[in-house]
Image (tube, rainbow, N blue to C red; front, side):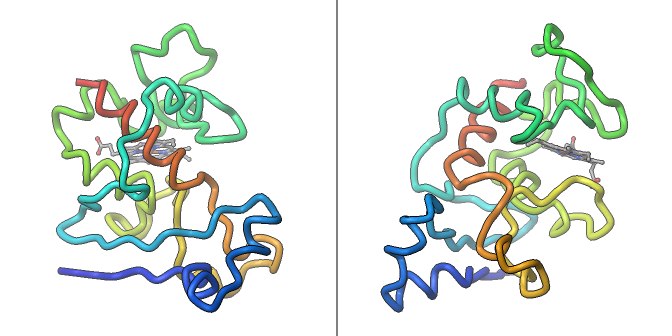
Length: 153
Ligand code: HEC
């Protein structure tokens, strides 16, 4: 299966509206392709930074991953939820691309998941205007999170 997601913001870039988007402090959303349950390519074209990824994962207003997941390597951080599988050793059971799709939009893997889609760029036509063309995490933050997850072997 092969899918291409086109963000409305990407069209805005093509039509020359990128400047106002940047002026609001929002990066234009990037397009990505997923197949076989994975996004093989980095959203930014670069590898992320695991240290910054760690901050996104523990940040309560960012990833807040520990609200649902346990990560033994972060045991000094307060509160680890257990409503989701532990992420210990996740990089040994999933490929980088599979982890990326999970973080970007887990509903592509399991439509009923309660995990928030951190970089969903389609199906946003019914959201409030101020939330249009926004994602929970930036493309760079997604890559930072993936870089941290890769350390969990
Ligand atoms: C609201 C709860 C919740 C939050 C917050 C959450 N997840 Fe999840 N996550 C889940 C659940 C539940 C699953 C189990 C798979 C499913 O639902 O399809 C899951 C699955 C995963 C998987 C696949 C693990 C496996 O072994 O199959 C990864 C990787 C993952 N999450 C990473 C993250 C990261 C990174 C964050 C933060 C950026 C995060 N999750 C935030 C609930 C959550």
